[in-house]
Image (tube, rainbow, N blue to C red; front, side):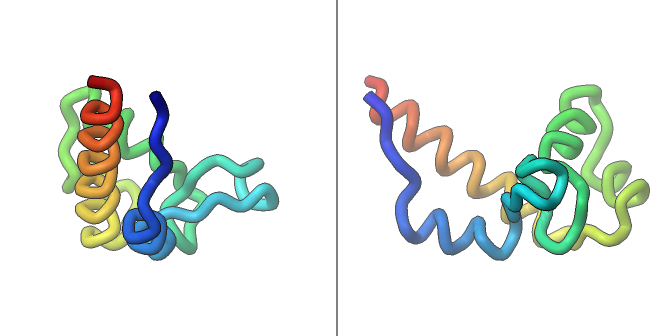
Length: 84
């Protein structure tokens, strides 16, 4: 069973992540940048820190990183709850 994001989650995500077919071919990116959110995930998966990520991408706000991670967690938990 698949559930959609809540309106609250969509609103919160809108200020943090953008999906625009004219920017990076619709790849989800941090708002007002061309940096895919997958890049942050890749950094974290290889053991690098949020500080390492922000050092490479200083145009991204630390709060956007934290908001993205919190929203991702909440959405994942909601999906898991729906699957059980």
